[in-house]
Length: 148
Image 1 (tube, rainbow, N blue to C red):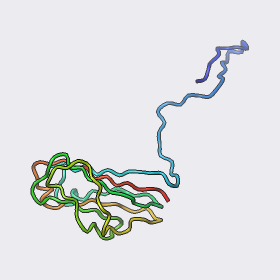
Image 2: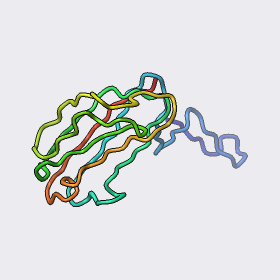
Image 3: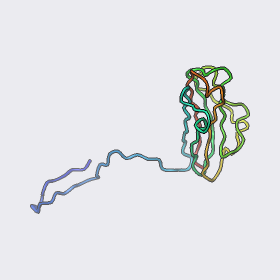
C-alpha cells in the first residue's frame, strides 16, 4: 500500500511513497503448461435450430486438449446428444449423452481429431435435433487444455 504525504516540501505538490495499488486488473497471461478450461453451457430453450445451435469458441495457439467432462444437471429429451469437433476435424466416436441426468464424469477423447496444434482454431459443440427441440435440460461440457 502506498502512502501519500500532502505537500511535504511546501511546494504545493504531494509525494507518494511505495507501490501504487491498482484495482480492477485481471487477465490471462499465456504460459507453457498452464491448465485452462472452456465450458459449454447447454440449456433447453436457449439452443436454437440453424446457425445458433452450433456453439463455437476459439482455442488459442499451441494447445493440447487433455480431458473432457460432462455434467447433466437436468435431463434433456430422449436421444439428445451433442458432438464436439476441433478445427473441422473428426468429432467424438461416442457423442455426449444428454438424455439422462448425471454428476460430472470424465469423457474419453476417442475419435476427436486435432487435439493439439500450433495455430489458433475453433472448438465447436453441436447439439442434435432432439436436444434443440427438448423442453427440459441443462448440461455443461468442460474441455480442459494446456498451453504447450
